[in-house]
Length: 114
Length: 112
Image (cartoon, rainbow over the protein chains, first blue to last red):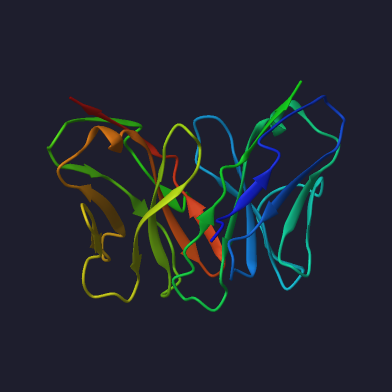
């Protein structure tokens, strides 16, 4: 049973470029959340997708957008990259009908913006 | 106000001893969940333990236990019989609705 998988594992971009990160949830999970983790800090919630809709959003600008596909996989898009967007981006999946709603995380995508 | 506060940036513990990692939280929602995750240097977040706001007893998972003091809004993680492999970052998190909030983490170093 595959867990949460993310691609790519590392990415280097320059300021102003656009990036797309991908995530496949754990089998049986229907909800995907994205987190940004800057160096030395805890993960910050970006947004959550359920039934192909953005259900909740954290305090991130519109440059951060996402998508969920019918197979529950998800993409995170970041436009007009800034140096401050350099971080580890974590995808987490869960099941909405589980009251404990434990998050299962992928290994992350390390994004470096030069 | 911070939703999750972890006041110990770093901790040292001797192998085989117990250690407590502190966590306080802030919410007005009567229904919430509290979690602890471990993040080794590889980066992946590993679930350790969960406590629901309505749970009467403290959660335990093997060597991990959660000291839940609802009135104080604290959810400290206790690791018994520390092992070298326990060296990692530890994050306390709270689920409020469908959102998760994470603390800034505690870096635990287990000394041989």
